[in-house]
Length: 151
Figure 1 (cartoon, one colour):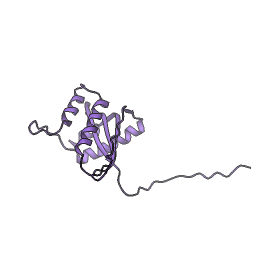
Figure 2 (cartoon, one colour):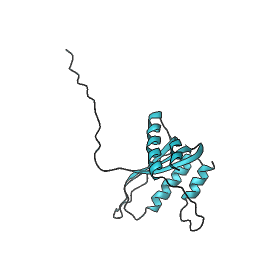
Figure 3 (cartoon, helix red, strand yellow):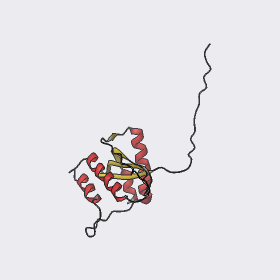
Figure 4 (tube, one colour):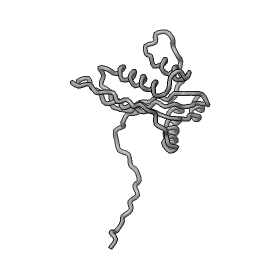
């Protein structure tokens, strides 16, 4: 299965902001929903594809649908997208609400919900990822140019 992830192609994406939620908050945090998909530039698309190809190849698992004991509406929303019954924006809004509702009464970290239309081995696919901020530092080379004032 890992080899099939090398064929992941991301077409467009939508991001929803999931603020930090604490049980003790007197005023509950509010979900911030986007209303339009992002058209991805080739550089951003390439980075997203490369990152998720690697993660999925290393950690991806087959999905087995279980009809009995179904506790979530998520599989239905994904299926509606896959059979082209609903569009990316509509489905992503439902997925964000489902995630947000499932975390009521819990302490949760802030993050972005990425929902992307994709193709996997030429078939319609949906990429769903909650991106959370990681602690720590990241070093990056910086080039500086010093300009002397002209006289």
